[in-house]
Length: 246
View 1 (tube, rainbow, N blue to C red):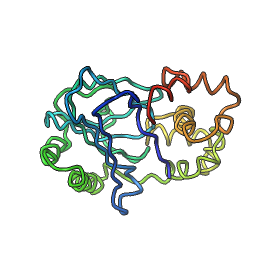
View 2: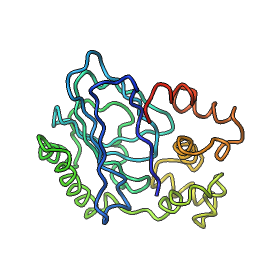
View 3: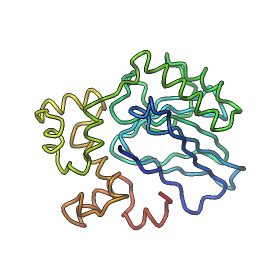
């Protein structure tokens, strides 16, 4: 199954810890992981977090201020988030295409204000407060199950097939053939379920694959790869790997 790379944490970062936990098997088709990002002590300067596009939707919880929570996702470009000198976030990373909640609630930038939507995010955030990450994962599982029961999180067979057969996808035409849809049907289906046009989704998936595969498996030549990588991240591949631990 699709395994997005971790967002960019500078190799020079000190006292910043990132952790992941796997969901129970019953939720493995909709949840990639539960995650935690926190400082172990106050940092000497603000921490800049380089968030990579991955087509996933995250349920985000700020444990420093439990009124702050939200639904987040990036489109095709990275975002640099200033998290300050002390922070503690936990979240749920959902696979592309499974979130059926209100897409107008999704943030594509830093979340710094209290949540005012209809989801019980603040109530769950308060339940997470003070728990070790292992216990927080159990509470996050309850939240995902709550969403599943209300059809806010639903397995998506179209995106699931694409994500499990990425090695067979080199073009939008390949993607459409894989799921037995015409290109026009695929366009409508993906826009409705993910917010991505097929070309943009392919762009993001190629970027993610480029961290684990040779670029010539994914791009026509080195120039194409470097241009696409820099457009998405702001860095050349070499400079990104020199700066960030991914």
